[in-house]
Length: 286
Image 1 (cartoon, rainbow, N blue to C red):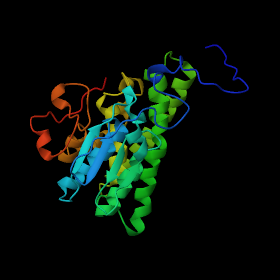
Image 2: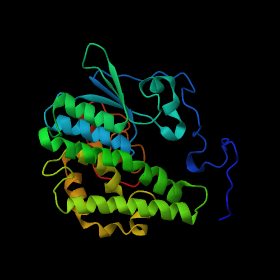
Image 3: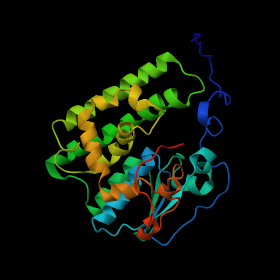
Image 4: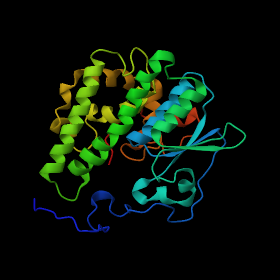
């Protein structure tokens, strides 16, 4: 790899951005006028079935499974086509990232963006999948551990290993090391506790599962499972298997999914009836 000398002032190189070069820019804001669709349910989710998006759909399906009034409409935002830069979406998430939620249960609709904020908002709203009292800090610690770790796995390892226009040893080694370290952290914790925060399944698990499970299942970032020796993390595998078997998790993983076997896709979700005839199992993304 030839040595790179940074210029005195950085400028955007749109021709050297890898898989997402056509949409990545160093500026925020809407690029086109586009009104978001809206359904009749109290919650409106605009997302895609990436790991961050799946956090929100699993949470909403878990709430419904537990009997909470959390009916929602889910609409796909195709980030590969730049739909996250439409004016309607930017209005509910100025950061132009999925997922984004509109909560219409009160007198005035409120927007909630960032996956961790959505999980915490819903957990507090319904007093569900959260811990209180002296156990709460442990849950929050693992929740924010995941939120802070995701960029190393996705934007770090995933990008340089699978999406960058060229493969370079240094960044792949750097982020492979960090991804394995994070798996080691989780594996050690899950060797002493059933779930990340202890005995109870919480939003900490809902946040971490969509990122760790695809590595265990071998359906993310090419052959990352083999490259990173993911089979070493037996406690993570046990935890993934238990969570993946939950009915709400199976449903949540296909909402806003637009790749793989058509029977495992659910571009929009408006009611439980939308899952009829669908295959509720993970499959490799495009």
